Image 1 (tube, rainbow, N blue to C red):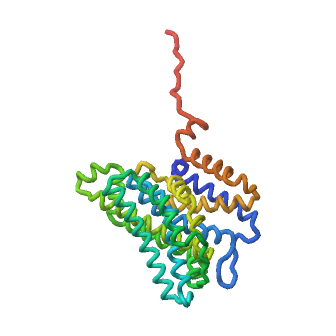
Image 2 (image 1 turned 60 degrees about the vertical axis):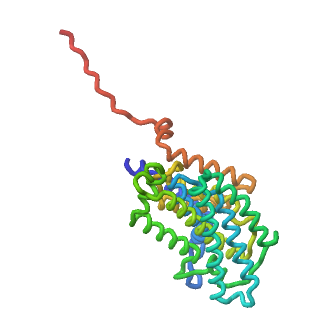
Image 3 (image 1 turned 180 degrees about the horizontal axis):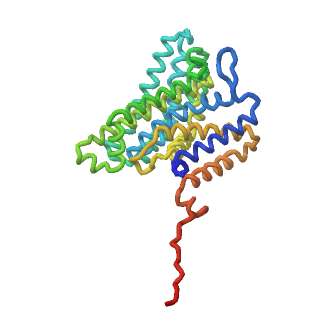
Length: 339
């Protein structure tokens, strides 16, 4: 069947299975309380917001043939800057001041993305090396900002980013959904998407065709930095503190995995925003399901790895052909009638 050949069918099918498991194992899968939606499903949507944002930026970077390993460190820096400035406020509940600080933190994240883009597009450093520099140095910078301590804040406007609701839906998920919608409009309703795929498919041919490949490359790293910074704000707002060691730790691996599950080619060119969103939600659902079914904490990573391997194999047409085989029509052999 054609639907079975769709790359997103198997991730969607496994996501449905995981949600069904959660529906039977959780006491409250989804419910309404005080005019807001609560339950396991809402926790999944809220928890997937930071990963969705990071994976969204990673999709654009990978579409140009690059990679960004520094997104976790950018998250840590963004949260550290925001919590440090908020902690110095006389009134931490001042909406205007908090919004200004959020803007400063995102601006810092954009600058960090610009740094990555400049190293890759201008200096000509390999993306994995260029972003590895900030991955290591950025985590150290975040610890310098916080002086190696966990900075706690008591700002209700700031925590609203992670724990607040708007129209009964978590604000964190709405922020991620808005970022996804904006990205879809810019990449699928304008020529930007084709330019990204062109640069990722063949940078040299793109330059010969008059496409400003360097500018586009810098742009996607800047966008990835901004999305990572926004994810860092949601993370720190959720725990009401800046933890420069744990914030965004290894999230770059989950983001790359979400991008791959969604069907984006790691070599650049073809990319899928819808697939990335599906992949991010799937990974978060898997994390919640591991806890729901009582998998021991020491076996959690191994369990997740087994599920991910099974998913990736199910997406491989070559693997499915070799394991299940295909019924090929064989030509009928006509019996020869002796003369």
